[in-house]
Image (tube, rainbow, N blue to C red):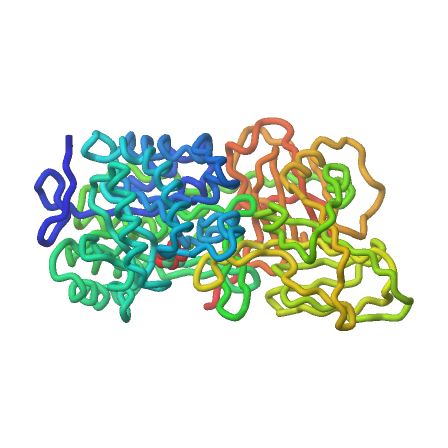
Length: 585
Ligand code: GLA
């Protein structure tokens, strides 16, 4: 069986120097029916290794309900990597960042008051131990020395940018080794300040994350670690986007030149991302450095393989560079061809609230609940309280809205409070009637000190300065309601002046990748044949939602749209290609 180890200057595969030329490809951002073709395309760029994170909150959405099947079948994904003749790097977190909801840490973890976050606090350690034991039991038999593809496992993720609790890192190493992981262990940090030291331990291989000034960063890495292979574990060849901002791109020639610098220096590399994929459903994360910025649905990342897995100019440039240092397969993946562009009318089938009230009961709450406290870890819930005051207007205030509240009084729209605008006050036209708010969690912060924060209305809530009480909540299981809406054959006449489901049937000659044009929609979500594509928002930059081929079929395809605001034109349209939006140059 092969042995993979760390030498004086290189990684060693069976004692021989081995340059890792890897690309990040997250199984959880690609439809499982497309894993193989994406991996093959990545190999055709010349990669010898594939790297993936493992998102804890996806595998364990509720405490104790661990799932590693179907689209979460990590073992099957790693087997495919092996089948394609590549090695694998696994980064199980528990924190992964990755623009993923909560950086992968499950929201239910933080219901325990005072539990530590990314620290050696005993209850946090107990939870991560349980999680890592589950995940590493999948990885353990797939290590290279057992005949599998896994050559490296990473401890934590850019921990030096968050903390310096060495006891926590030691605990992670202990659990990882106890789970039978014998391959070399790494850490990744930005090569600046004290991060490389804070985020690592002497027995772990320090690696860097960066996308420019490679020679300088490698020198910093070498200074921090006099022996061992040099590795850029995240060579950022693109970047992610926030709603309402521009689409980030990098120049293919410049990125290729950086890659060349890395490979020429003999460094190993993991290109972040070789293929970004999509934040399907409600899985996107968010940033908040004073302003809340949720990440968009597309995770195209301006990678060599675009969101639909097709090679870009960057793919070909990278392939040329890699070919100078390693064998590159002759074949290349098929290029883009225009996708089908059928159209279909959308018909309104039901109001969101009507379906939600049919599916669940309004529950009285003690005080002002958070979404987390009612067990709603992603998505939506309604809040309401009955006002028994006068007919005079009054001002509603709350400390913070996480992340968007759409308010009604006796069913009539009165306003929206948006977290990214720091809105936390609303004038009510009168103080009588049912005051209700639809709360949307737009994605949990995945970086920095707001990791672990709860969602919903963060209290106290007040009306003209007096605390508002008597709250009730109505849980919204959005996927279940979309399925229910999708089964409705009867339509509502005209337009509903509230969040509503719309349905269309689209005919296809054959299953195919599609790009749903959302530029005439407001804000909401889409499902195709029950598969949750993700969020759209008129703010862009993205103007299409990627529909993976395996989610479609020849014949009729049912599309369900949840429009939270205003749909300018009730028509399903497709674009022949991705529309990722404006760039900043
Ligand atoms: C860091 C993190 C990654 C990702 C990138 C930005 O390097 O380690 O998970 O968030 O930033 O895309």
